[in-house]
Length: 289
Length: 277
Image (tube, rainbow over all chains, first blue to last red):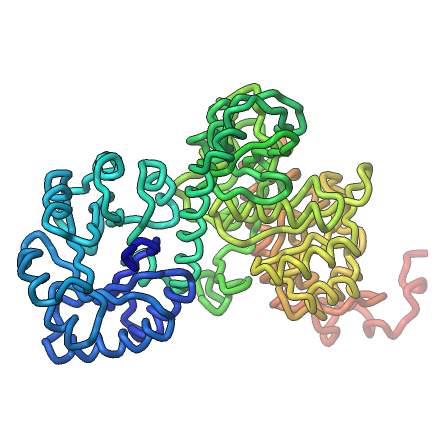
């Protein structure tokens, strides 16, 4: 089992998103929040500066046992003793990088279609990026592939894949529901004043998605159950809070929900299994003084 | 000269600088259209509303916000319907989840006939919500000691009531309201019980930093005109307070100098002796 298998949340550096804070400070916050794979990406830095950054990040990531990937430059990855390299479709082919890095280091590649994903898997990539799922400022001009490519990759790609591109806590559920098990983010994490908090939220979504996919949860979801909605006892076939909201036409309204006395964030509705005896409140704003 | 747009005159609550000192409620208007026009006429930047269950029988049941989209407003959800601190905290969290900011008006009624705020639960809820990062504006009794305690608990402003909600009785205890305004180190917004523009002017003359009104605007014969009247009264009352009223005296003082008065030596002669006989 490759060390990439247990990675769920991939965070890529983007220093232009945090001009007033240091690289290490931001990435440490992300790691503390649950980022378990880090990539150094800096298209503009001269080679020497890039190596310095790679070495500094190597020290940081090693302290936390997090693998470090360097974007575009296998020789920098080697010099800094990083765990691997990430390539774009326009970069050197996987075979050339493999020759340089040897069998143990990781090689990842960005893919933008299922054909590219298949080719990467055949060429021996350890993982792929699948995206951009949504439009993103990090890759301006690139057409978003939407969650349909995520679903295609989930159905047929056997190496780990990270959904990437415009993903943030508000839309991650949609990407996970399409079949992603791993997420990657840049601006949503490093551009936030609290990168750790964003990572915690994304991890929590990933974990909820995993639980929702478990057979036990699926069995609970399929049974009809009695729940109290806005003070009225009802029988429902809905498996999740989202399905229940949809029964009342609330899935795309501005309603806010409470589940057994706790606020249920909308992003979690798809993963919140309903159980017998649950108490749900759907509320909204009305006129008042 | 005081200048209306002068930034020094801005009311600062939490970290927000407000141009208007009029907080307006959104309930009980004849129609959403009238509400919007009254809001416009009031010049208010802060609007209040309540959190209620969605009517599940009617998916079209629309929230108040759909009428306010695109306006640059500060949303102040209240916790009306809460009877204790726990319920108020739950409502505040739900309101925050809607993503419209972190302001909350703590409103905990102890009695359904008077809707007077429960001071103990209001203080408890304020303490908890401040810890959770809310900008807390508690609706409170017109009690200077309680208002001080709320300020110490971290309230961003205190909102003592003039009279019970919706009564239009005006300021029942001007002495207390004046003391609260005098002692507070956070803004004082007089909330509830106002009846007309005169009450607004009086509140401002007593030293309040702003007012919150809903029923007296919404239920006026002409809500839009009343919104404007209250806006002007707020301005007038504030100017008057800054200008400084004269002391109250028991007897008259002539507006003109006594020297040169035409008949007799003014005040020197008993008034009764000057009547025709």
